[in-house]
Amino acid sequence: MTVNIQAVNFNADPKLLNFIQSRLDKLELFYDKIVSSDVYLKVENTSIKENKIVDIKLHIPKDKFVVKKQCKSFEEAIDSACSSLERKLVKKKKKPRFQTSLKFL
Image (tube, rainbow, N blue to C red; front, side, top):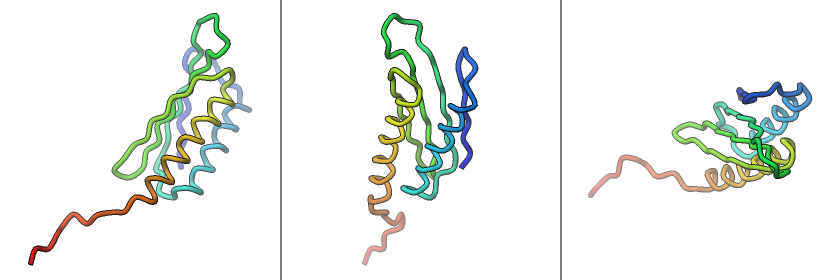
């Protein structure tokens, strides 16, 4: 899976980038048809401590999942977003597929 990471208005640490890559690679255990993912890292200029925003867009065939989390650290936000994506992927995998062509007798 290809992971595109964009840090908005700051330079991300290579350690953080490796953490994001490894955490998103684990999503393939839950759904093996993931095409790519886009990760946006933002820091909000506010006085509150929870000012790190992570926005993940996960592309799968015929669908796209978007999760946005705001936490005290990027690692915590990535972990929380990936947990949400895991639940969505498991739900998507369990959903029965319907055939598009129906035969009428």
